[in-house]
Image 1: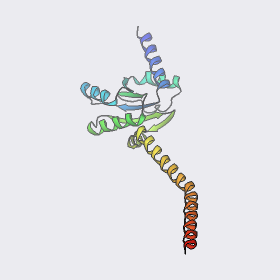
Image 2 (image 1 turned 180 degrees about the horizontal axis):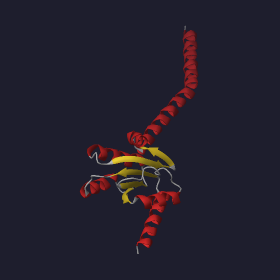
Image 3 (image 1 turned 180 degrees about the vertical axis):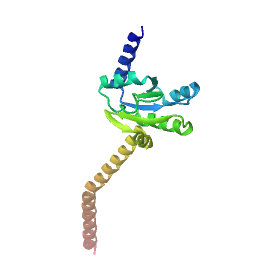
Image 4 (image 1 turned 30 degrees about the vertical axis):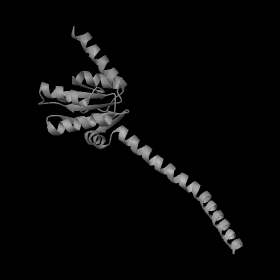
Length: 175
C-alpha cells in the first residue's frame, strides 16, 4: 500500500523540481504548525512550501537532474518551490528566519544552478524585478534624452548662428 503512495510522491516532487524556476531547501525543526502556516502565507501564491521526506526528495531530485541538495537532505526538511519572483520568495524566507531562528535556509536552486545559503540571502537583498526593470527603463530613457540633445545641439547652434548673422547684417544695413 505504501509503495504506490511513495511512487506518487516521488513523481510529484520530480515534477515540481522540473517546473519550478527556483527552489530553496530549509530545515524547520522547532517551528509550530501555526508558524508554518504563517510562513506559507507570507511566501505568497507563487511559492509552495512543502514538508518533504529526505529519501523521497533525494530520489526525485536525481530523477529531475538536480544535484544541488545531495549533501543537505538531513533533519526535518521542507522545500519552497518558487514559480514567481525568486527575489520575493527569498526575502520572505529570510525575513521569516530573522524573526523565527528555528527556520534555517540550507541551500537553493535557481535556473538549474546550485546556490549556497549565503547566495540565497544575497538574492533576498536584491530589489524586486519590477523595481529593477523600472530603474533600467529610467536609465535607458535618460540615455535616449541625452542622445537626442546631442543630435539636436548642432542644428540649434546653426540656427542661432544664422539668426545672429541675419541680425548683424540687418544692423549694418540700417547704419
